[in-house]
Length: 478
Ligand SMILES: [Zn+2]
Image (cartoon, rainbow, N blue to C red; front, side, top):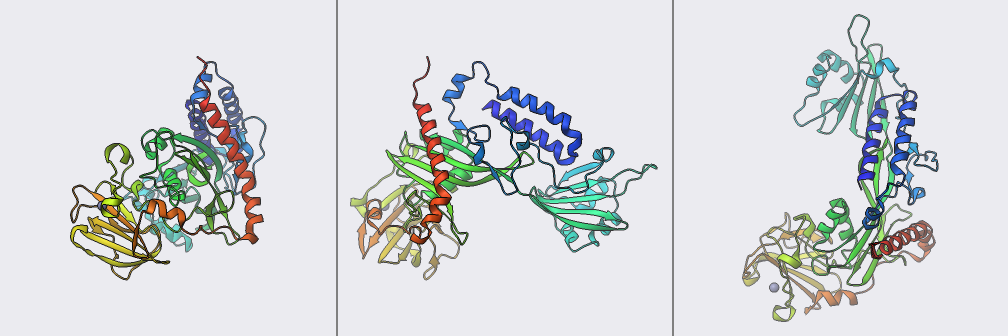
């Protein structure tokens, strides 16, 4: 862990250098960096035990370098840790000379910052700003900047000590922006469009308390855990189903630009073993560019009904229903499932449908009823309030928030009372859902394309899982 973090930090520093310095001047620095990195990745004495117990594998080191891909043509890679992984020449056509290099000033826009004040801070006048502003339509973006934007100024100093704005780079994000280059009294504009390098990262976790805590322990980003819970939302109720000892794995992209981490990407494949039953999902983009998650047989993970009506991940990072809020699964007593959850937890429609009621109803308190195709109906009771726009007649999509957990009606503590009816008869949603018609699958005509796109990924994913889980289960050396 420390080793990988060290390499990353090193790479980030390098990347920062590279973003603003011409490549030629970095050859020496790059070589030195390479030596240090090679030293860092050589086996270290005493590191074996740690490696054994580690459950995180970062693929960009050596596990599967050929999975790494980029929207751009790929960089050449050497057998060692390729420096091209870390050093990418920035896409600036006219690279500044070394003397100019120190003149780049990079300023990140903060809340409340004014562009004119920033201009004056770097020694430029309002007139300089107007000159850029009036040079092109694109330059009008300077009139409306947001926190997080970056302004880079190149102001070479003349012999008499005065500086003139030679280039101005505005980055809306690391991936997108404009470069303004002085042309006499005017500025030419070029779009900047960078493509991130995608590095698949493989992580596994085991449930000891909650899914969220498991994710945190393994340093899996919260958004990625939520995405996984969404992918499996049709087959696992992440409030009632998880058990201690369940395990999961996720292969997801991390985005890099010039070697610097810039954000998390999509889940490529994921697996969750719940009470001994394993679900696997792989990302697939069809001919129309629609993205979905499917099992290896091409069956969609998206089912007619969500398993859980609660969107528990939206409210609390460490809500653990099993430990702190006993679940009363009291079907027989009052024909519903009670989900104890903190007040205000968002409640979502478990399937597409139309709201037939959103009003007070005796002991149910604030009640929402949704009618679905095929004679199904779902009821959501004791809500603290309805979601915006939820009223009789409103059409909802699966997953739409319809209200929030509360204690209205006869409820001793905050909980959602959820009912599921088929043809007017109460059903236990936890058993009936398995009997519903199968979810949509990949069109038979598209199965070849599906297999071509996913076979390799699934095979690798399966290898990663078996390698990791075997390692995890090995008895320790002592
Ligand atoms: Zn109830």
